[in-house]
Amino acid sequence: MISLLHTADWQMGRVFSQFEPDDAAALFEARFKVVERLAAIAAERQVDAVLVAGDVFDLQTVSDKTIRRMFNAMQAFTGPWLLIPGNHDSALSESVWRRAERLGAIPPNVVCCLEPRPHTVAGKFVLLPAPLTQRHTYGDLTDWFASAPTDSALPRIGLAHGCVQGILSEDIDSANPIAAGRAGEAGLDYLALGDWHGTRQIDERTWYAGTPETDRFRANDSGQALLVSIAGAGALPQVEPVRTGQFSWQQLEPRLTVASDIDELVEKLAAVGGQDVLQLRALGSCDLGGHGKLSAALDAARARARALVWDGEALRLEPTEEDIQALHADGFVGEALQELRTQQADADAELARDALLTLARILDAQGAQGAQGKQTGAGA
Image 1 (cartoon, one colour):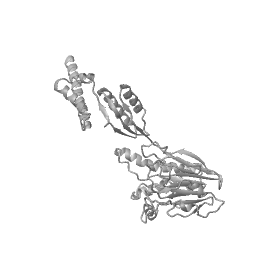
Image 2 (tube, one colour):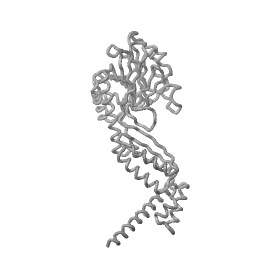
Image 3 (tube, rainbow, N blue to C red):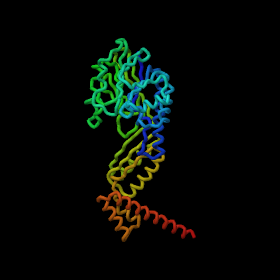
């Protein structure tokens, strides 16, 4: 019996520039924390090895500090770590891997497989790695698995990074191809894959682990690693997904048409917590009262969420007659409000919407000051 922890796509050093600086820093830091969790899981489950199927680093140019911190984060598991380069950190003649070697950052229990050759691991299984030596290849680097001579008494484990042909959706990059059915034709007991950032089973012996810490707004079952148990050579693997991610990434695109739609969205925003990374794009229309309610809910949710990205460009403001009357917008000002409402259908819709909101806020503030002044005068 062998036990493995399969993970991939750590993307260490990734910069989350679409977020505010404090949120980007927290998401950057989370990638080190998840490696620590992986090491703790491997130690607790007493696995025979950890397999990391490429894209360990996000860029060749990550800092020396990031390299050292990543290997430090792996310390809790003292058994074998087996890593291969992916398309983000391919094994070029001068690469992040060579820099890690020069820094002396790689612990003795970590094997960086930079060449396609068999590795017998602790006398328990044979690893067949297919490291990427450039960012994009158009030949199948796992071809050699079938002809690789190994001890027939030991399980054969493949480790690769790329796109299984004919399986993933058509919009996935077709570079770095891996033949469908590779595990069966190469006599592999398990093929551990990276590149697809979600957990996905390809066949009974082939799995993508996905990234252990979610990093994008796509519902693809990410934030996991895979515990793999194999009774012996030829036995089918038993695969158990294990949650590892800290943050939950969610994408919402509500269409707002009536007041109850606003109320429903406000209720969802009230449930946002500190582990949520939320992207919200609103469509449709709302009146000024609904927009005020939504704005207040967004401000409150931003303070609770880890990160919140709001896109209101497609949300049209439709002030009601009651809105305009409440703002006491008569004469020229009322005409201006009506004109701005109409201009939202034109090319300068965003500018018109912002102007309408600004005017509404000014009128609302003036109304509040006037009411306060009357109260003060009455008290005198």
